Image (cartoon, rainbow, N blue to C red; front, top):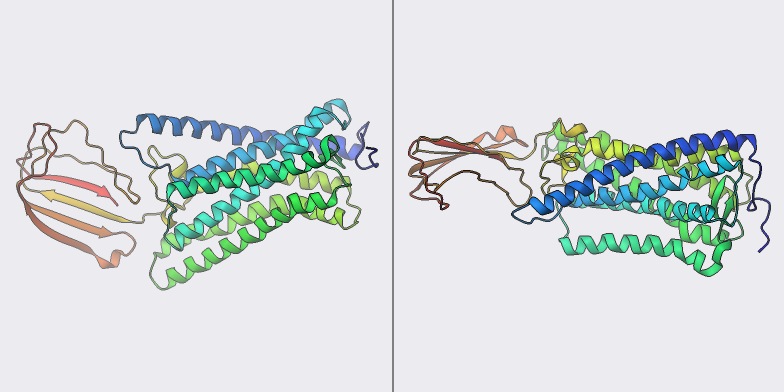
Length: 394
């Protein structure tokens, strides 16, 4: 196939590309490094948790979505990192493995990043607004379906048009200008669906949180902690993604878009990876960096670096009896996991007092309940004869 001027090999690079692609490649490298580092860290943690956990519990769904988003960001960053080859050769060479690989990773990386950011937004909606968590099997099926859709959209073009599909698209390699319908329906239609849907979902969740805080159903402190993040998530995603998408759509409409614009838009979208790492790792740090992340994904997990929130209840159990005193804490979400180490036969005699403090509605005060019991046990050989205290968060 004979390529038009915008799709053929470009050598040498014009000044605007020789300078502009430096920024695109630099931020692509930064995003690749950050995304890969956190991805490898989470891979190690997930394997460690799976091997060391005595009681097998499902992986936190939000954490797994972040894990997949990082894999998408790695592909996107790799696409723009490959511009280093063009700078080294002082040319964008068509019909080379590097050109095809760059076109492929632009297609998969951009779409995958958009799809998983939308999936995270939908998951946030159900966690915060509906207080609902999908069954694990259904959740994993949706993640697999996301990836099947992403790679199917990227593969249709090369299957139909072969090696002529990914060629130079002005500033770097992507879908041939001749295949404008494929650009729209295999890629940008879905990207724009993800952009507008993500904005709409977070806007709805933000309004819901504010309404609930005014009515006193959730704490004002928690709402103020989560509200800025409801704005940041779609804002950063839109700023990074929309300029390049708008430029490509303008090109499809016949507008002459400059190479300088594509370099600026390419720099922004190349920032997507490191900004995702910074945003999600800092705002949901209690999940991403937890020693043992539970299954909780609701409003109480929103806070920069995991600080500034305190939702849930604190329960204190006090019993008359033995001389030993022990204190334990457990991260609870849906199901409690309490690890008892080095404790013998646990026996409680006399009166047990349970005091619960509601952190969401502290005005409700402390609720106390007395119970009488003779034995609570695990077979280990030691007894509680004096008063002891157990505290844990729920």
